[in-house]
Length: 198
Ligand SMILES: [Zn+2]
Image (cartoon, rainbow, N blue to C red):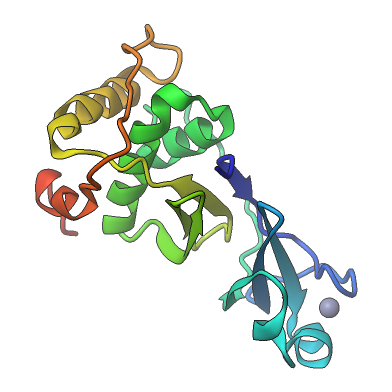
């Protein structure tokens, strides 16, 4: 099974090396090969001349999309601000601890519903599904395996997520959470979490 990981968007074209400028259009090519997901971010010119033709026939081709580069601006982190679902997700993905696998997935689903993450692709590996999510602002890509949650487990996972949101990852360890890989309950999630329309 693929490790969870984060594929950050490059700040320069990975073909010609020119730095991206604010609002520049870039192309991302996602390849899954030898159990590894790799992304390439290239400028329009390089895409057209070197990548566009036959892109989909490349070995391991998963997806291609066009994005608009947003230059990072210095955001002063608010020290009193509580963990947001998004900062928490990032930490969980980096931590890659199996006991948080289900919680990570639930967080991603929540963020997707709030349009803070987009599903870009879906892979199958070792019989399991892996979702590729993009954070549209930073362009970062997260890979998150489907834990095949069962309905009966949802409540416990949601409690774990709430505890993590409240206390962060440094909170006392929640009980280890084991996921028997049986019935997927992704569809059931739709009705299970609070709706929060803007
Ligand atoms: Zn280029």
